[in-house]
Amino acid sequence: MDTDIRYSIVIPVYNEETVIDHTYRRLKKVMDSTREPYELIFVNDGSNDHTIALIKGFRDQDDAVKLISFSRNFGHQIAITAGMDYSVGAAVVVIDADLQDPPELILEMIAKWKEGYYVVYAKRTKRKGETFFKKQTASLFYRILSASTDIEIPTDTGDFRLLDRRVCEELKRLPEKNRYVRGLVSWVGFRQTAVEYERDERLAGETKYPLNKMIKLSLDGLTSFSFKPIRMADYIGAVLFFSGLIYLADMLLTAIFTASAIAGWNLVIAMQLVLTGILLTMMGIIGEYIGRIYDEARNRPLYIVSECYGMVRKERKVKRVV
Image 1 (cartoon, rainbow, N blue to C red):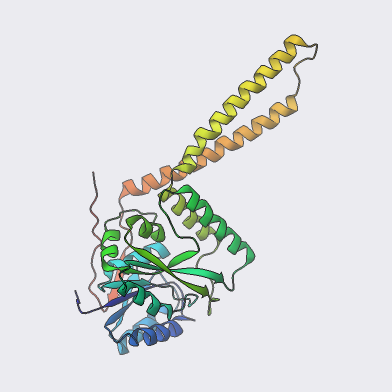
Image 2 (image 1 turned 30 degrees about the horizontal axis):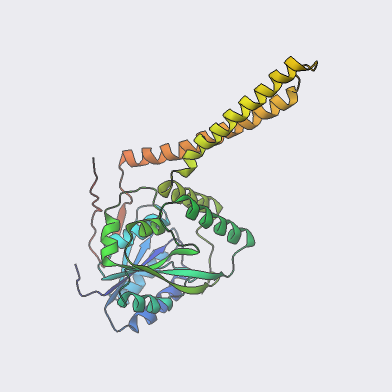
């Protein structure tokens, strides 16, 4: 392990050939200004364009550049995890390659870290270049997550943040397969603070978080840090049970004390459809939790590294409690 390295910059990449050169040059300029030793760890998450070749070219002329390449696409959160696993710096910064998050903000994060904070996360005050739908759904998700969990997960934040080495070592002990890294960082605790910024538009290329991946990440966040969705079955069941009793009592009293016959088959059918929909929804929620339990039980590795440049390949070791 290179104990002289002060900062480790983890950059997950997936098909970023159109922007990776700009990303490297901006990161290098920022980190050179610190006048302290650093490493740039690019984690290739199964790219099928020229991203790997370009990063190898950076490595040929810059020893600070290091590359971890997965055997296939394992996902953004897993790429972040691998980068932290391989990092050796006293402080680790996670930043995406699309330059929506300004590398220059790293200097502010370092200043906060030197003040004694263990985690410095970037908080977005404005999101440029994003659709109204994405902004509103993201805002809704953060509010639901905040209301559902017992820990405080900062709103309007992504994975762009600085972590002290102590925090990284604690994260290595967490074995979750369906990872929501920003939630795990909040869970481990330690002294945390924010730096605010306006998020820019993507410099080039396409977003690597389309709607289906955003939904998957949202489900990972909710199911990893809250049991409230599954507890909804108890509350809904109780409400429907007592509502059914009241409705039944009303029909019986009407039949006994009036000349009206018990009618309302249309209402009964509508209620049956609503109840069936609620039951299937709750079964789906329970299924999400069971699926994640199954993932944990299989105990497969989080990722498979096919090749490394500038560092020694190693296995991720997780201590499990049986």
